[in-house]
Image 1 (cartoon, helix red, strand yellow):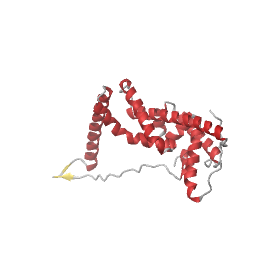
Image 2 (image 1 turned 90 degrees about the horizontal axis):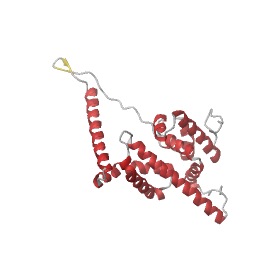
Image 3 (image 1 turned 90 degrees about the vertical axis):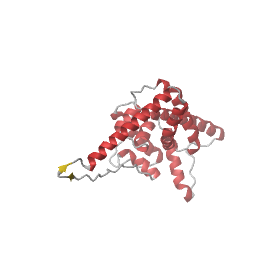
Image 4 (image 1 turned 45 degrees about the vertical axis):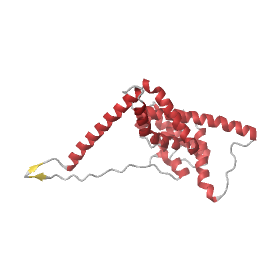
Length: 243
């Protein structure tokens, strides 16, 4: 488990998925006394061919969608909406706002799509748009909460309900409330690494900052979350100077 998953697993009881290594049985074989291609070589060749076909198909759909083809845009939406929805839900924890946020993301996508440069990764571009919409959602939520607390005179750190059956939900709600209080750059780095399980390289490309900056912001976000939630820092982690 990488370090940035400490607070996520401590608070929510979740652990990052670690992709296992697939084992391909690929002994050498021969036919008629002549050595032929192994099953592994055939499998790799077929996999490359299938992936190339998929990429070509995705490229043609994207090109048509950029030209304003409604069928292609619908296909693009169908292909990516579930992944966008999962990303948004993990970054907000609010299922009630999910449909509206997904709709906002794809409205922004199709509005900006004609200007999308094909030399960039579409998935990275899409992730960035979704992350920006989530940022706006957190900003609006903080403003709304502040207004409601001012009117109702409710303290910011209201006591949690002690009922046993609500403990898990409360813990998760407290985590997302704390996540929303982080500065944007720290929240987005933490979400990319600890919640989305991106590699440092992928998070760097998506957020547009160096790998070292992603690493620092993730660690600093975790420290701030631990402080807000009253959790101990991960073993061996000392306090760092804020960026």
